[in-house]
Image (cartoon, rainbow, N blue to C red; front, side, top):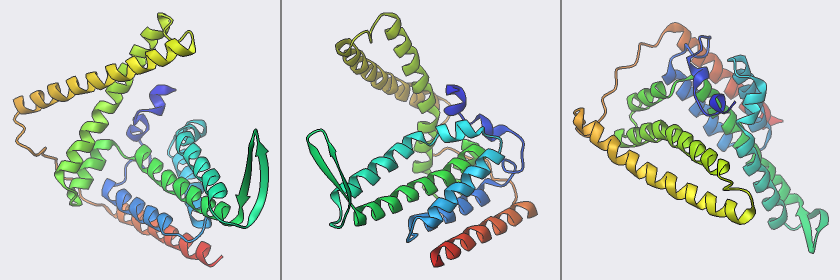
Amino acid sequence: MNFELFTDIFTYKENRFTQLEPRVKILTAGLAVCLVLFSNGPLFPASMFAVSLSATIAAGVPARLAMLRITGPLGVAAMILLIKSVLTGSTELFSIDLLSLHLVFTNEGFSEGINIAFRILGALGVVQFLSVTTPAHDIFRALRWLGFPHGWVEVAMLMYRYTFELFETAIDMSSAQKTRLGYSNAKRGLASAGELAGAVILRSMDKAVSANEAMVARGYKGVIQFDPPRPVERRDLAYGFMASTLILSLYFITGMA
C-alpha cells in the first residue's frame, strides 16, 4: 500500500486518460483550479471534487487508495473549518464545553470555513487526477514548453526525484530504530524521532552534493534539456474542449444556484 500511495505507478497504465497530451490536461486542470479558488460558494468546489474523484477512480485508482491520498489535506481542511468557526464572526451558531474551554461556533465563521475547506478539496481533487494520469517527467516537459522558468522546473524535478529516495531512507532508519526499541516509551521515541530527522537532513545534503557532481560530470551546463513534446492530436483537443465545457458549465450552474 505504501508503494502505491507514494509513487506514480498508475500514470503508466494504459487507459484513455493517461494517453492524452499532458499540455492539454495541465491547461484544463489549471482552468479548473483557478475557478475553484475564485468561486463564491462551496457548490462548485464540491462538484469539482466529486467529478475529479470519480475520474480518478475511472482511471484505475482503487477508491480506498484515492480517499487515502486525501486524508492529510482533509485534516487541514477540517482544522481550518474549526479555527474559522471559533475565531471569526459574532452570530452564535452553537457552543460546546471542552474541558475548561467554552467554544462558541459562529455562523459567519462556519460559512467562511466551509468555503475554504471545499476550495481545498476541489483543487486537491483536480491535482490528484492530474498526478495519477500524467507521469512526472511529462508534466515537467509540458511546464517548460508552457514557458515556466527552467530553474523552477529543474528544482521541482530534483525534489520529486529525491523525495521518494529520502522517504525510503527514513523508513529504513525508522525500522532499524524500532528493532532497537527506539520507540519503547515517549522519551526514547522523542529522542529517536529527533535523531531520525537529523539523519535524513544530513543524508539529503550528501545527496545534493553527489547529484550535483554527477550532473556536472555528465555535461550539465546550467539547463536540463527536454525532448520536444509530441504533437497535439484531435482526441486531445476534443478532451480539452469537452472538459473545459463541463467545468465552465458547472461553474455557471452552481454560481446561479
